[in-house]
Amino acid sequence: MTGASEASKPQDGFRLAALDVPVRIRINPRARRLILRTDAATGEIVLILPSARERKRGLAFAEANIDWIRRQAVRAPETVEFAEGAQIPLLGKPHRIRHVPEQRSLVAVEADEIRVAGRAQDLARRVHGWLRVEARRLLVDKTRDAARALGVTPAAVTIRDTKSRWGSCSASGRLSYSWRLVLAPEPVVGYVVTHEVAHLRELNHGPAFWRIVERLCPDHREHRKWLREHGASLHRYG
Image (cartoon, rainbow, N blue to C red):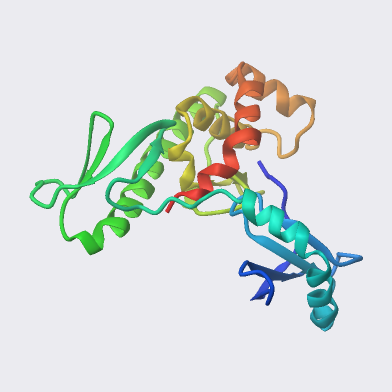
């Protein structure tokens, strides 16, 4: 299941002299012109060039559009670090991160808190690692259940941190998911899993594919809408 994506290579970036906002450069040989856009996942300003030779012209193009860049920078969502007191969603429900050095378990969920033991300097790393482990457990379990319902078997399940896709299915039957799905409401997670498992039968988005999704996840339209409207915000965290 893909979002907006580009066949492009990440390059370096720069800051405009008149505006302290970073602009990231990407080279996309398929681009027919210079393009300025915001990254839906991160809120970053991105300058897309057809080739590296266009860099000087691209910088001038960005300077000429500084007012647009300023407006987009103001709208960019604020990032939320994994730190003491920060609030993050867990399966769509807000949880506060608390540092509890004396706690026996390294990470534990109690009521609406994610409680983390150990040294303060390790807190962010431990929260991130724990979320990835929880995401894998959740997604593997849901994949197994959906695959059993459809009578298919995935070749493998991997967890990544992708920006443009919540999930994908390769021609060899390997399923891949974003760990950030553990931040989304559980029914939305179930829809993404259903979508990818359905590709094990239909590696396309034709009518037969959507009939499978409809059968396994009748509310899929609602969950797709949630991802369109709120999915990008999940990249704010960590």
